[in-house]
Length: 275
Ligand code: UTP
Image (tube, rainbow, N blue to C red; front, side):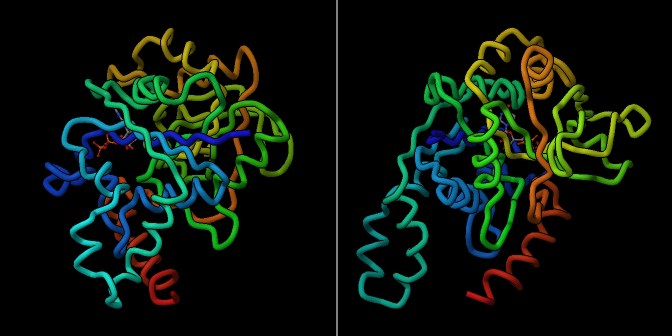
């Protein structure tokens, strides 16, 4: 049974400067809820209530968000504003939160390896909170946990992207198992369209088996001098099995300004106004 979900959240978020100069990108709100809270809700919906967060310098707001604020609680007690804290209180009561710090930002692979101290030797999920995934009643992690229970190997969420966008993603090639599932045979990090093995891009949801940690440790830095999770996953795919899953639902790239605005408009119309 998977219980743990890792949130690498140590990156600099340079695309959102100056907003992210002293505030974590993962705390940017979509309407009135921070990105990371959407991710933790998705994890809890999938039955993962041990939340492990990789933080870094200037990221204390993350730990404060998932803790009780007694002064605020006291101030709004008995008023209608208490309602606004209902969802976050539920998360705080239902989950445990553990933190570890990535001292040098050496890439996503390195951030995941940093999480080893709090994950240990068990399969786990990874959520990149700046990829906001929305499904009305079956979250992407819930879909992936079910698949893991069937196949018992690492799984990455994939999405079809326009060919001219492949340079923003890890892109896979694979043998088709069923319409929405591929056994991965190749993976390239941020390829130019002419070098992309397909238009199936990896997005920020993973289920990883714990042997990935040793593989990441032995993976030399790749593109941009960063330790790439894509390179480690390709080694894992070659020596065992990694699946690519075309998830059901919507996904917004909230690490980019355009995606962030799109997500805000969508969530305001479809989640906030309909509450
Ligand atoms: P991104 O590349 O999207 O995030 O990494 P970034 O580096 O913070 O953003 P930009 O490109 O400068 O705007 C994907 C995820 O991996 C985490 C980030 O926090 C984000 O959630 N990450 C990335 C780490 O935790 N550590 C790293 O060294 C790099």
